[in-house]
Length: 131
Length: 310
Image 1 (cartoon, each protein chain N blue to C red):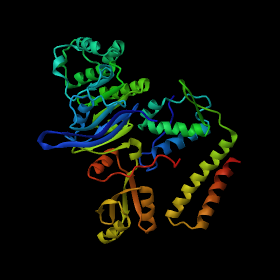
Image 2: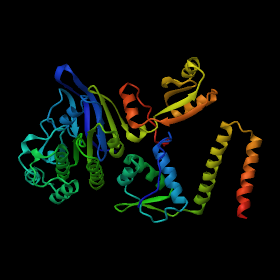
Image 3: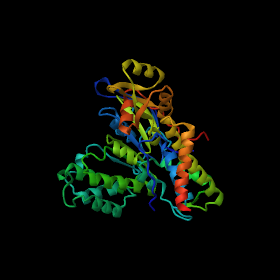
Image 4: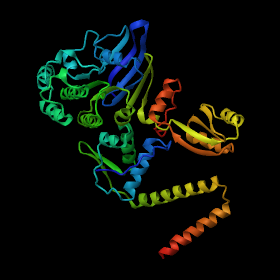
């Protein structure tokens, strides 16, 4: 199966880390569902233009975290994702996005008060529209 | 433990005009694709020849699958090694593809005729043409098909893509990848094409003027150097910035007010630049070919540690 992972060619973030983060989020967010057979290591490496060493490392890491399991001779599958993992992942994803936003604020010398005000305004606007 | 397909221990070899290759120390692990990269005359082909015992080192030792075979490679091992030379052998030029296959099949007991025919069709190699009459690319495609049909454990390719059109090139990449998936053979590929390295290689071995500059896991080179553009008033200010960034290179004023430089450890150094109150305009990571050319000039990359300390 084709896995929608996009390598950022402009980021100095190590390849295995980029791939691992994205694959993990695809699994936890349920885009790739339980039981899905992932591509073989060589095939996936070819698609991502990275080495088999990197893909193997990613598969092993996620296997250790319980997100993947490998059946000898058949391949690597997505395993069951627990509720806890889902919650933890959500928080982590939000935290990361917010950190990025705050970094942008810092780089344009936005004050703490301004930033907080802007944040509250956006929350009000977005959530207000929904409820 | 990782099994080594090839080990070179202190191998050196005199070449024409008093030039010497080596001493080379190198391990090529089994089951991986290693790209042998370097300029013309850097010693890549000689190294491949030594791996086939077409020529012998003056000093040092080579091991194949952990044995030295000083008295010559045994037939059973030779039958598991296939080679696509830089220039094809003249002996087969009066044969067409089928006739040449007939001859080779005799030497390679694992020869897979069905696979060979499948590859000839896939690569669109002309059936009736004599090998000597084929175009460079057609002949290359035949050679690659014949090398793979022998189902080798060790495959040595000397600039396999020279003369291939982009479609044939893509077919070759896919075929090699599929072969690796089925057999986990060891492949050594000498090449100048960066895109080939990017798509195929697990490891890169860099040679320069007969010396081995190093071996790296390909992905650990990714992001090892970045180019950063910053806002500076003048040369003097740039000079001060350069003092603060050990390891950074090629400081230059691009246009009035904007300077650029190349740096390892981009993330730390970009932050450092910002902490010094200098505005970063943009940054980009260097491409593989740029990283390799810096390496050739003596600027060895700081390999990105892919492990997380465990």
